[in-house]
Image 1: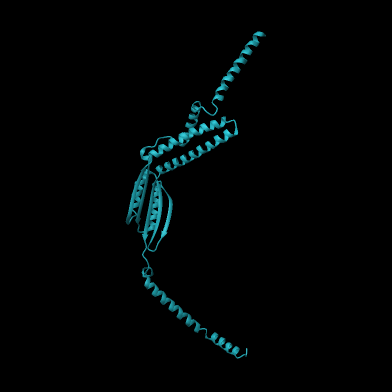
Image 2: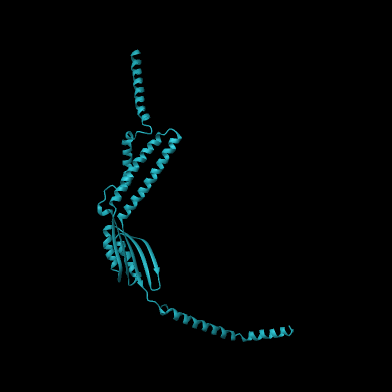
Length: 273
């Protein structure tokens, strides 16, 4: 039996020593050594970054925000609108906003068109075919490659900081430490959300180009609308005089009523009524 107890005791001592050695690093790393946590945090941040970052790098052409503003006159606004909608549909684009206006001598429509960059110029040329008179055409492109890479880097760095704060939060032992870490963690998360919103905006603006189109149709004014202000006053005075004469003639049609009222007034004055 002695030969059996000694090996068991030896195993118990070795197991206790192993557990003590394995617990000591966790106590020493509480709240401070970020170097020891870096591998795990880098793995966490890299796995989280894959959700935000695109799987393939964008080429310089994909990092351009292309915009165009164009205004022209059309012969038939309704017919041109139908042809433009068909052209946008064929280019796999979309009309994100439509505004219609009407003035004294023209009707107009404002369109905001989003289309992929490779269809940007062909669609623009197709739209301009509806023009009878071109007022202006402005083209512009903004290179956002630096901003694109900068936002990606900031998101990755903030994700790493977030992972560190989460580790510290798990290691916190008292309420003041927990509250302090949670405050910093909330601030970092807000910064991450802001950076991700900026990243999505840049990604959307580079994935689709924007065409702001204003087209209008000239509508001939009627004869009354072409008259001057003085002529309008003269016509209004003449119309008012005709209305006065019409009322006066209408009152004459009521002479029986005036006769009865006059007789009633005389009888009342003499005290007979």
